[in-house]
Image 1 (cartoon, helix red, strand yellow):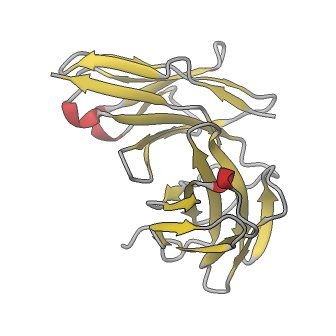
Image 2: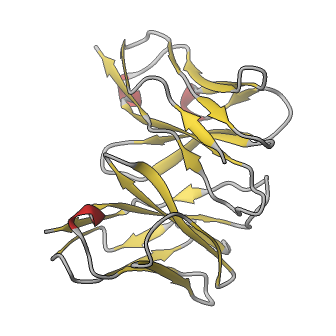
Length: 115
Length: 115
């Protein structure tokens, strides 16, 4: 069974540009969450999608957005990139949302460098 | 609001020695607790989780953790570490209520196993 797949794995963008990251969850999983990992702030929750609806959102500016498609694949977009957006972006998937029986699986991450 | 404190940012230990990585949490509601491991340039892998029942939880790779409600702790232990255990370890908490699958992570503990 394939795990959580994230693309691209590495990318470099220029300040002011926008970026789109993609995540394919484990087959059958309907919940997809996104996290940002930086040395200074650690692991921070961005947002979660379940059945194409945003369930919850972390404390990030509106430049960070996401969406989920009918096949549960998800994308996140960051517009007007800033140097501080350089981070590892992790996608996680699980079968359900809001259930204590959930196991949340993470992908390998997308490394974004903003120059 | 929930929070997680990992008291040690780095833990050096010799191979075959026991190790304990400390985690304390704060929450006003019942929570579920997790330990994840991150190897260099990789995503997060679930080691173990506490949802309910026995307070001693066994996970993969010989790790175990004990939930202590009175001390609000969930320390991770391994009786004999291997060089391959060198990685960063994250403690996380969720209440799986209206917040969906949101995980709140600690700042991580770098375990360095030396020969």
